[in-house]
Image (cartoon, rainbow, N blue to C red; front, side, top):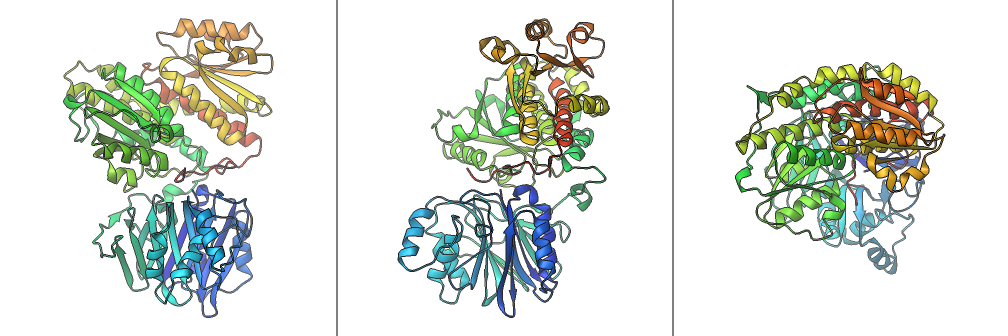
Amino acid sequence: MCGIVGYIGKKSASPILISGLKKLEYRGYDSAGICLQTAAGLELVKNKGRISQLEKDLAVRDFSQSRIGIAHTRWATHGEPSVINSHPHFDCLGQIAIVHNGIIENYQALKELLVKEGHKIVSETDSEIVAHLIEKFHQGDIEKALRRALQLLIGAYGLAVLSQKEEKIIVARKGSPLVIGLGKDEILVASDVPAILAHTKKVIYLSDGEIGILTAGGYQIKNSAGQILDKKIEEIKWTVDQIEKKGYKHFMLKEIFEQPQSIANTLAGRIKNHQAKLSLKTDLKKINRIIISACGTSWHSALIGKHLLESIAQIKTEVDYASEFRYRDPLLYQDDLLIVISQSGETADTLAALRQAKSKGIETLGVVNVVGSSISREVDSGIYLHAGPEIGVASTKAFTSQVAALTLLSLYFTQQKKLVVDKKIISQLANLPEKISQALALAPVIKKIAEQFKDSRNFLYLGRGFNFPVALEGALKLKEISYIHAEGYPAAEIKHGPIALIDKNMPVVFLASKNNLSAKIVSNIEEVKARQGIIIALANKGDKIIAKLADYLIEVPDSLPQLSPIINVVPLQLLAYYIADSKGLDVDKPRNLAKSVTVE
């Protein structure tokens, strides 16, 4: 959450920083600002609103000679979106500027201390006090001052610091991601790779407790003790084209339609001779229980993973919200395996759950999309999704790739346990890209249905077994981007309360593809229909019973129940997208949300 960009080199910094911010707008977009080092001192431009407005404000001023700067796009935590609360923030003298991603938990106590000492705090943010702390300790060396300031901070931070008197940018990380890009005669820093990809593919990921000193002549990475580190330089495999819209109206729509390829990428090289091929250190013979911890959409994929691991690999599996796992002091045993799932690999609660398990000696495995992310570096072993960059705030292709990866993992564990592997699952898993393409071909039908419901105020999504989590995910997508209240339930649970909501104005989406609970789903549909609810049904082609009951029918391709979530979620993604788009909403930047939740 929040996006940071910094540049030092031989080019004009302002256009590079603005371009980087635009690539990070999915991380926050309620205000934005830029600070440039010029001959006259530190020059600051910031405002409430989108980066396009900041760009207009910069256009009337000439900063073409500035070669150093930092910039920020904000997702508000402390203090409402406003000009004064937007970043960068200054110290009292206007000689030190900072941009910050994260939360300073003890900022109130620090603020009181600084105010007593005469510092003038002008914003409502927790971030501003960092600039004043650095000022407090500054005696000519910005790095030393930052180090002393960091000793007082409790919480999470990704920081970039600029001083009027030193031609360098100092960056520091604890809990909030920062990546340094090494270009030709230039160095960049950002919260995420898309901001620097147009300039270089060579990057260094900062780890917690590390500080980077960036100058026009090079860089140094130091640990908390001040020792210089020899950090590995990694190469990004993504291309600039992959983070452009390619003619689609929104990134979300593009990413929905990329799913045949993203699934193919997740499976590539991992199915051979009717076997799942994964390179994992985990010895399943030592594992008695699996715990999966995740947040949001990844939590929904974890619920499907529980079904897969228990039904295919016959391993006891529990699923926990990472935000709850970290605080309830869970009972962990040496024969447990913790699986953490995160698209970004930087989700704060999920990362905290991972570290809690590791502190107790529990083996860990990560399912992540971003190579080099914190989770990918800290787990004992892992599965990269290779789904490509996901820019839309509402996750789509990452979800289906996560479920595909968990299916592979279930098959792999089945092989380790010397159980009989269902070859139908493996063969149909390999054919998933084609089935998803068939589901995407339903887009015109789904768009017409969506137009009928853009003014609805509530939705229910109902499923059973493998498709109950898909109901949760479908409801989440609709909430996230259309702002329509929606809830997902196991279909049988409607009799335990939600059925009271059913009337002639309530659209109810049923996940009714064929499985061993199909007869029960039909009964649930009958119950809703008897109360005049509007039935939108996902069913397999040729299902005459569902077709007769449904007011609106979406005919999805046949599949095994274990693989149906990956196919069935695609029409729900499209339904949410088309409803939101028909309402004229900004689908890629839904209000109050950010792509990567790096603070609690």
